[in-house]
Length: 62
Image (tube, rainbow, N blue to C red; front, side, top):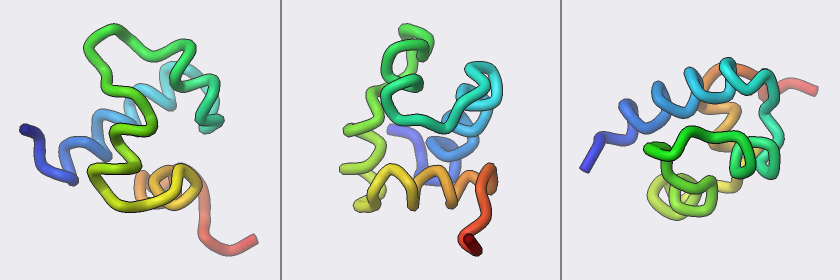
């Protein structure tokens, strides 16, 4: 199993490839070897917006 950091790095690369941080876009457009967004959220015990924030793609300040 990948570490949390490896999971976040993989997710960041995939979100950049897709061009969206939207959860539905990720699930529809992810490569076959990537896990579902719900699996990532469950593994990290975070909501999707918090997971994306952890990748550094969006700021926590709004």
